[in-house]
Length: 225
Length: 305
Image (cartoon, rainbow over the protein chains, first blue to last red):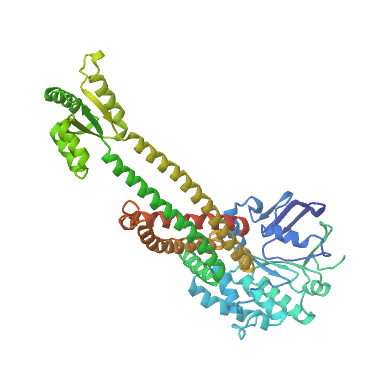
């Protein structure tokens, strides 16, 4: 589904990615580990077409992401759900409104919004928090809204950039369980994290990135840096 | 999906415009000043042009004949002139009616009247010629000069040929200059209005940066992200054009009253009312264009997908 072909990204004075090549198959759950600044976020930005490689190519199925026209980038992004460490929720909108806003932006009808948004909140265990603002919720609850938002448009791929970075271990574990469930129903998941326990509990494929290079690609969920 | 998005874009645009309160007000103010000046200059220029046309229509060539010129000679010239395509109308005034006109005009001047009684009728007959177009007066004058030139076989019957070409030319130059100045002023004001609206929209984009970031993430189209800001600019343009139209009406009354003592007053009011549709379209389209230019510029710069 995702194919990085000898991708390098060079910023002035910094080499963020160097000759990165890997493939993520449809339905896989892949974790990417590495120190801060190793290039994990740059890698995800490439998938979201937020950044362009200095050399090499990135494919989403047969689509060369960085050859997609500006007009078609939104179509690509509609196939990807994203979750971030800082949640990126709209603070002056309630949980329900955050989801409704996302669905509206993706062009969903009012009927779909009123039927699907409550359902998505129930799936992530926030059935009783529809009308709560993010500031009234815990970190774990906010991240659940972010996950609900990421899956509401039924993406093919879910990317999560350090989603448990701001959470306590128990909440982090609960969040990872949600990702597992999402993956079980067929959505490909790419997760970046620092958390060794999470990697070990996932027992899945782990890509280790260091100074912009993929230094290890383990199928058995090891966290070795 | 297109109609759903369009509906939402309009809704968000109107809501944003309303929420931005004072900043939107600044945009409307800047655009209103610009459009009012544009409208005012348009009125002034058109008024001057119509005044010029009126003057042009009254300008004619006047041929004064020598006192002893026979009626036959005058008739011959009149006939020759009537074949010219440039000539619209020829009016004959006899020596007697010239004298009568003069007497009527100066009836209060006793000395002049007494002198006239002693001298008799010093006036020759006169032909007043109206051209199809004022620019053709030169052609007609040249024709008359040739016809009455003894060297070319004509008879020297003309005492004087006069016409008000200089007045027309001066008026024409005045209007041309005023049009250039008006265009310059309008252009500078339009630029200022665009800058103000640009800043307003940029500020709106800045305050909506979180929403824009989320919209980008979830794959909102370019049209969906930028549309509301463009609508904001267009609303400012439309509102300003209506306000300007409303301001221009009392302004024309004020100008009429102010100039009442000069040449019978500049009656812009009737001109404004007669040309309301035209003025409305000009201000409306100018307002929308200014709003569109400013908002496209701002979204292109700050609301990137």
